[in-house]
Amino acid sequence: MSKKLILMRHGEAEIGAGYQSDFDRKLSATGKYRLQRLSKVLGERKFQLDLLIKSPSRRTMETASILLQNLEVKEQQIQEMIYESSVDNLLDLIQSLPDQYAEVLIIGHNPSLTSLLAYLTGDSILSLSPGMMAIVSFDLAEWAMLSKGTGYLNEVLQ
Image 1 (cartoon, rainbow, N blue to C red):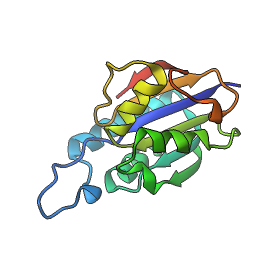
Image 2 (spheres, rainbow, N blue to C red):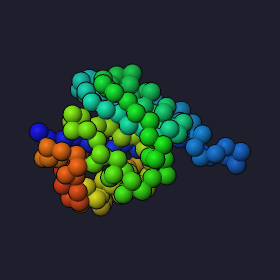
Image 3 (cartoon, rainbow, N blue to C red):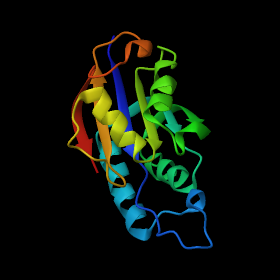
């Protein structure tokens, strides 16, 4: 059985002001518009996911909410460790997933998501911009088998 991991950077956020913490930054109007467009594309393509894992930051929660307007997801989780995470922590999270989940979406932040994408696929050229998702496939039966270079970049959507 193969696995599919979708790594998504949150949508474009408002520029942080001195009075507002990074954690509480909202999506910009442009970010919301682009995510609504992406959500419609995912709906038209009948994307179905077993699990959505998201950071608890405001912009990632808003990103997930917009995507879920047209995206079918069986389960959702909020993982605090995704905010300001490292590649090692994200890898540990993914490798510990139950194997019943075949298709998983993680909505998080850079630089860790882009670094994880490069680690898994060997593609160090691609950088996830806000609202961009990379779909990576693995010919692996278990999430615990994920390691450097085991993924194949299938598609990038934005």
